[in-house]
Amino acid sequence: MELNPLFSNIFAPPVLFFLIGVIAVFTKSDLEIPAPLPKLFSLYLLLAIGFKGGIEIQGSGIFNNQVLLTLGAAIIMSLIIPLIGFFVLRFKFNVFNSAAIAAAYGSISAVTFISAESFLTSQGYQFDGYMVGALALMESPAIIVGLLLVKFAAPKDRPNSRKLHFRSILHESFLNGSVFLLLGSLVIGFLTSSFGTEAAIEKMMPFTHSLFYGAECFFLLDMGIVAAQRLPSLKKAGSFLIGFAIFMPIFNAFLGVLVARLLSLDSGNALLFVVLCASASYLAVPAAMRMTVPEARSSYYISTTLGLTFPFNIVLGIPLYMSFVNKIIP
Image 1 (cartoon, rainbow, N blue to C red):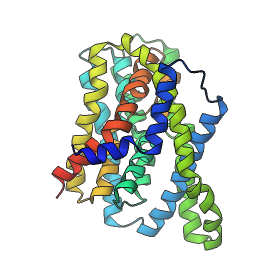
Image 2 (image 1 turned 135 degrees about the horizontal axis):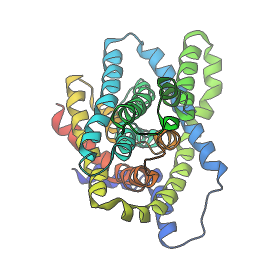
Image 3 (image 1 turned 90 degrees about the vertical axis):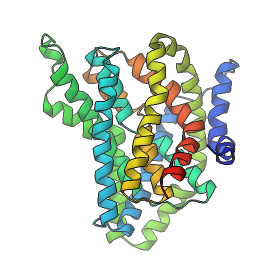
């Protein structure tokens, strides 16, 4: 891994604000973000990247072969990765915990994706907005796989009140708040760009562009606080799960690079694809699993994704994955 991209990533404002949040917890500062604000900024970031992505997809042409192949590959990866994770985790955990954790690692982190975009911009790489479409499409399949694994692999004596039906699986997968907003704003961006006026898009520009970087920094400050608060829970997870939280993203990233090479993606789009494969969900999947699979221990899939995998990807993972891309993709 080259050191210059690593240092430039660590000293980027969003990462520094994340580290400030971590330091605040370790030094027992009373810094805290009022509860409604992180949720508001999370929704704002999803809305902004969805709207921008919809405009970019319309500009790229939704029926462009490269776009369709990339989006199709993204869906396939979000189906395969949870299965791999599930079979690895079954060496140590029961069906419920394995399925919940695997679903989290098969899904995506929108903030990690946004951080990768910021990294690419700082390094001078070009990338296409249609990759936001891949982001939007990769969350639901992983949830579906996780819930289906529970449905078909769970003990037969599971109480009827907890048995999953396909309607509830689809509801949790596609109508989860973050998934719904991201897909909805993507469609709005596409429709506005296709049938709206240029003036309408320009009116949205200050909201979706100028404010975006500052909102990302503020949100990552809060994420640093939350991630550091989750670290003590990792003691309960054990060394096997801690190792999984680091090495599974790296393995997924390597798979992602190979697929990106097959798709002939350029370096910028390849990194975004790889980051989607390597990231883990700490919002949508935990929310779905907490409601539908109460037997799974939430401390396992939340503490690992948020307390370990997310910080690793933000600080070290993105430049590491960029080095994979540069070495494997000509």
